[in-house]
Image (tube, rainbow, N blue to C red; front, side):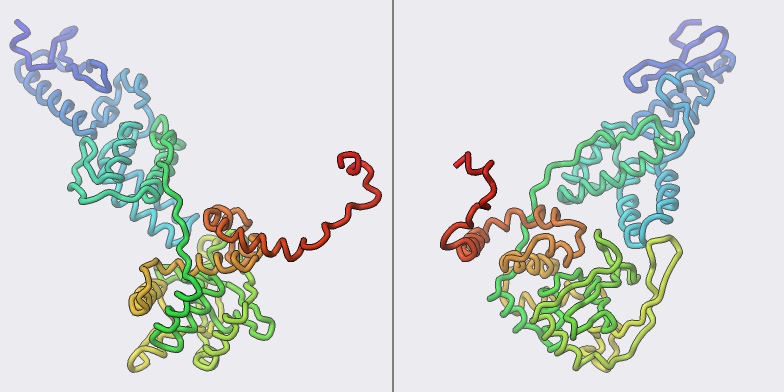
Length: 433
């Protein structure tokens, strides 16, 4: 019988049929173990066509199609099988035990957006470094990567977001590699994209004055004054309770943080659980003013999620800032939501006629003001909740040289007149003079 009676890619071998196809740049053959009949030739041709289509679409599961093939070992496909969608679900479920609910929500958001681009039904072991690079390009530019079934996006993501997405996916695929689902992590050797360093945009004292004057209420002015003069994160600011403040000692202890999900957690800090902020006079005055409004308010017992999975504690909280003061009919909540501060900030900035900045600039402004006043970077780091001054140098390094004139003036005052005398007994140094 001539070969013209065989469908493309189907051939006779040792009395049975086999098919051939190209996979990862190589021509491979798989014996089907069925006799050479007209009916079987047709079925073999259809099978071969479906294999080629799956390879082209990037969702071919070699081990599932040919579980006894000798080619599995050649391509490292003889490990456990799992689809990208199944891997994502398993990984997120296990991560739930070690990360906060807010972090889990961010991870889940990334996974939900990225898994369809890789192919939810695709075998994890088939994802290559090339696939990962094309995915990064699609995230960055908004252009389709090969085989993507997702609609074209109008624009890409910013570099920090792309790096964040890739880091999360790398963690997920490292889990797959560690547990035998794939031979290696295709994301592990991909370097992060270079990104421009974001410079802080602090408010000047004149801009701060305009900002406070534009506040619509006494409480709003107090809230933002405390924000600017303490540098607390917004989740810490709305969580602030009178039980945390000692106006006589001039201290504020940061004990909790409110997440965007509405959960109270321990503070987001590298330096430890609680941190003590030493209040400057403007912050003390704002808190004294606010005490007239909320100090005798109702105390609530709030559940605080601890870092250990499943453990909580309770804090008594008489919240310093209460939306009930500004809501019509006193229908406001017990405390502000984190997201509400950004809306309040934007409204005030617009009313004050100031250049638009994100609300997080209140924290940057605190750091810059303290640097201008000559504060030690280590002290600033402790007030802001960083474990060392390195973060201060990293974030505000480009801004700090602007204070050189002030530093020189301070040095002239302290080193003016005669230079300090050299210790009399230091003969080793005198020989160099």
